Amino acid sequence: MRKPIIAGNWKMNNTNAGTKALITELIPLVKDVKGTEIVICVPYTNIATAAELIKGTNIKLGAENVHWAEKGAFTGEISAEMLVELGVEYVIIGHSERRQYFGETDATVNMRVKAALASGLKPIICVGETLEQREKNRVKSVLKKQVDGAFADIPEDQLANIVIAYEPVWAIGTGKTATAQDANDTIKIIRNRIAKLYNRKAANKLRIQYGGSMNAKNAHELMEMKQIDGGLIGGASLKAVDFSIVVKH
Ligand code: 13P
Image (cartoon, rainbow, N blue to C red; front, side, top):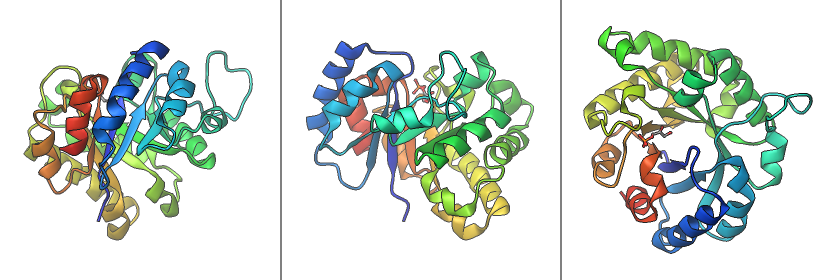
């Protein structure tokens, strides 16, 4: 019932030349994929190039962040309107790297989500615990705080435009994937929290991805799980063949 969504998060990788090479290689590899939504989230400077290349294909475009204000004196920031103008459809919000290195909080995540939705962008909201939080058995309380914060004042009718990415921080870029069962169980905790905040029907419709060292080798097993509706892919999204294997899982 929930359409799978595989999104690449390129992070701070690829120039425009690299963007052209990667997308040109990817397009034919995934052109026959129908049942899965395919998204690539690229650096701001590559958006225009990517938009041109994916025109008429089954690949959709995402950005890696968005500011909450409509416009104004925010040096170095990018607004939702600027992204929409270039054909961006999805935007990653609250990635753990932004929380860790750039002071992102649950409150700013919420502001960004609201700004994105107001402009018609679809947020991919990232949540996930650190290793320390996991070892201290705090997974449930950490996720509750992140989910409650991100979804504050978001009306139920917007849930169809939102994707959650569960990314355990300890699994990102480490080659250490959560086991499929673990990822499934934790995503269930997130879905149950959404059911508490809204209702069960809304929670059952919301798409929740797994992210963290998901790759060509483990994608199939992860995607087999009932709760896992897709993936947010870092490293493996930088190689066309690997990413296409994840997309086809
Ligand atoms: P890796 O797939 O490189 O672990 O990164 C995951 C991630 O952070 C996607 O947003």
